[in-house]
Amino acid sequence: MSARPADDDPEEAVDTENVGGLEEIVPPRLMPIWRRIQLIQDFRSAYGRTYVKFAEAIIALVLTGGYLYWLSLYLAA
Image (tube, rainbow, N blue to C red; front, side):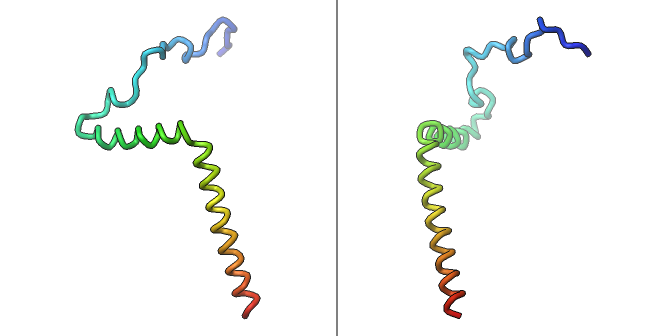
């Protein structure tokens, strides 16, 4: 139960230099689906922050518009 300082983490003992993705274990008939997922992941890694900021801005505008519409209905009644 005592942890020795000389013990390394198990992750340090694994060589991750030439590790591929899931395409190594995905069956061939599921590869079209996996390629679609890879495209999405590549897009997210390239444009993730910009896309999220843009999506948040659109959602904020829609929510604000909905709130103002609700408020106008409430005040008109």
